[in-house]
Amino acid sequence: MRGFLDFIMADIKHVIPNPLNPRTNNAIKTDEIQRVLKEKGWEVPITCYQKGDQYVILSGHRRWYAAKKLSYKKIPIYLVEAPKTKEEEQERLGSVQGGKSDWSVYEWAKHTYDMWIYWEKCSFRKLARKMNKSCSFVSLRVKIFSYYPHSEIEENLKNDRYSISILSYLIKWLDTLSRTKPEIVEHYTLELIRTTMLAKIEKNLVGILDLKNDSFIHNASNGQIKNFLLDPNKKLLEALLEIDGYKKRYNGKTKMKAYVNEINYVNDIIKGLDPPGNVEERKRMQSILNDYNSRILKLKAHVQAYINDNSSI
Image (cartoon, rainbow, N blue to C red; front, side, top):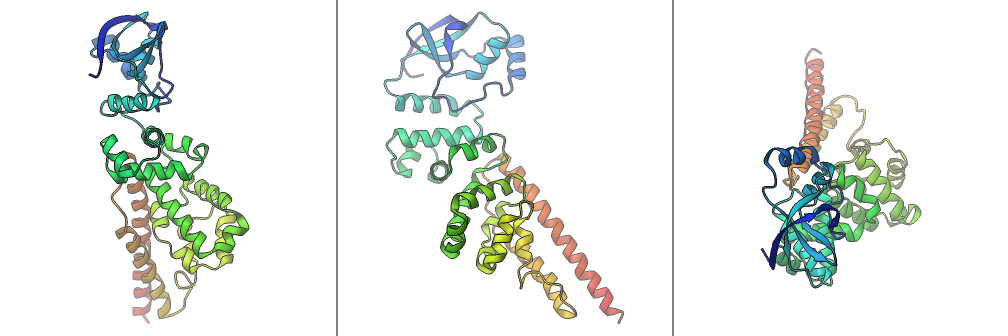
């Protein structure tokens, strides 16, 4: 432990949460933590540094919160040297808590972005080395927090309606739209299109697989793109399949071809999917895959029905 000074039993009224802590909800799993404290006591003291007559927490915010809820008067703390700068304090918050606390997607993203700012927007390679993370891990989170107004993504990252992956693919999708259909972006503004797409993601009308495949942008007319953006309940996949060449009510053999094309399209975007990065993203991805696999089964049933109808002629 860096700079260990003393072990004390501190008055809980003098222990305060760290204002730089990216974890904003200390009530997570508090019932479980309270039960552990009552049954087993303090297995590990919390870590603090002294500031005047107060003790600022570096590690143990949730245990401190649970102890307050249990009306504890005193709690055990390890006293360590006070950080000399905000940069050092942010770094120590991450190093002390990162391997021990189950930080949320939002907390890790905010911490990564804050460290990048504190280290004067250093290269992603240098940031990854300092944080002991991969370059892709830090670059994605910095890019997302640099691109989106934080108020737009904070709540839905916290409640897992957004994932890091889908926000990253939306940036690429919006960039492709800006380059390919600049007149639409100029008319509606990038801000309005971005908030519209975020709302559709929140309602599960747009998924990672949809954003990875930019066929809609390249094949849709300006009118079709406008109709998709203006319809708050329109799925991106539905809009794509309504484009000529993807979905038509054909007669004869061309109807069979339309079904096969749809099956191939869905299979292609499933194959192009990158492995999800964490448990929540894997759950979300599994739900999306289930939807697409269900669609494939329905399309195959249409194909079989078509074959049966035509074999009797």
